[in-house]
Image 1 (tube, rainbow, N blue to C red):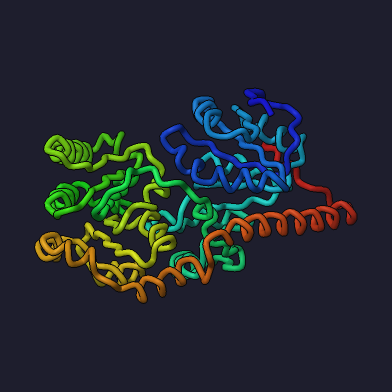
Image 2: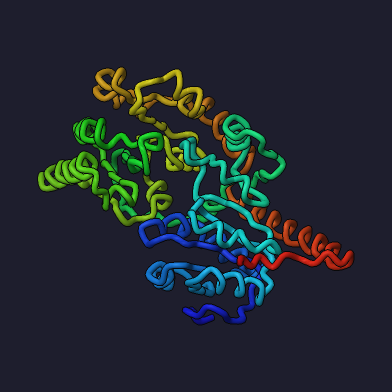
Length: 390
């Protein structure tokens, strides 16, 4: 179906995927596209945007129908006119509340990853009818953080984004390949988990010094555009280190645009921060070493708030002088049993490929349940709030 930039138009669709943000947050929706395209085979999916550049960005990425709606009243009329059954949200953008003003669809928050970042649990969760989460860890996270919250709103579906199989994108390498994948600095200090400014350069220098080792530097997309001086400077220094070694014959890679899940195929160990990257790697490759960082240098708090850290070495101010020179031993270490236990805690006892089915089944069940509820309302003459705002 062709793309649209009209406010009020009939569209054949059951499920709206609402995305109100700018292009530099597009990665939040991009990772869901294969799953949404699969859902579209049984429940017609429409992508709704509030920014024209973002919609145009997605024209290159998917054939799913795309709609741009500028004003709130046009959005409400668009929903009412087309009678959509369910709305999905991949973040907690402020403009989500405009979409939430329409009461007839089921509103479901699906987020854009599974991690222990503070931002993963928001009081805004109370605004949605249901929240899809990966597994037991996310349920415990909501239980620990939110007050007066109904845990029955949470539905465990695993991690559908990880069901997609990607072909290897790296050339064969006779030695080992180690990835350093730092996250960005967050919107505020409480959500800052990056290791870039504190440990990034030291991690890379330790890795390039290892024999028979290829280093993959995979920064979070927002690191590459960061205006925070320390982050931008660390990014450039790391790129410079790898370029210098490549000029001398190495084959290291700065991977700013490659799909990280495709890169995982050839990665033998991962060093990363508290983010979804480490947990994705844990799910896909629990048999391979995982090393985390902690910029706050509080291992007791980290173990409490980031359970996976109990099964991993942790680079922090206290341990850096011990761990960085001894990376070779850590990268060859076992610990698979502990990582498998954590994999189950975060994702449940799932095999790869099962989460997409759970997602599609959960969407269908919610749509069917809402249809019954709407018939009850109409039968009893109560009507349904159109969601219009004076």
